[in-house]
Image 1 (cartoon, rainbow, N blue to C red):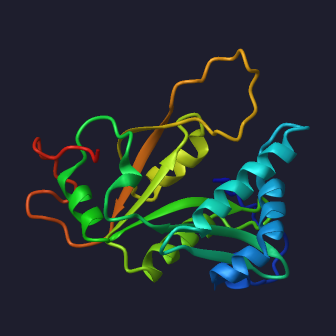
Image 2: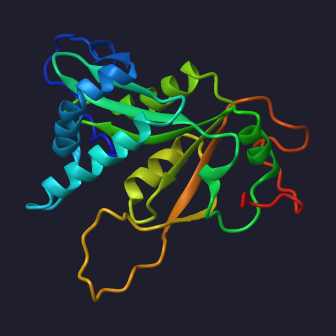
Length: 231
């Protein structure tokens, strides 16, 4: 996720449309997402904080993530646009079999497991906001709309713990950190034949409870010792 930059106050006394009024959100279907994948990759590169010379690799990784998500059941993508693309967010419905949670360290909260089994969890794979939009709330609007369109009871996402800007943004929006998931390294990254395979990357699992909460648990994420992570 690329965090939006701070919006600078306008100069002069004249009124002008706010970024929220100027930017509109639009859903894309799978075919449209495939058609615009190169444009979305350009948006990602322009919005990323990649070091010089690393833009190509970052672009390719973004395209792989987008392609992988498009293939998932329940895929959805939103774009924010005015005269050009200002941002995008996409994700998919978490499979009922719980495979999305593989690698979770320790027992899942009981309600997370229950909502997963009932098909009410939507995973946000990526949020990208162009730094020149001037809309500090655009990233939040994108994730809220994406979850609302799918009538999700629980939002889920994974954040690299080294990406403090993304982690702090999700936490400020009310997302809860429920623990660590370790995912295998990207198999498409070339490494020397003699290099050892790195251990699974630790990611922070964040969730946002959207449905009614059980009595005694206002966060909706009661822990239960008998609840185990999926095999």
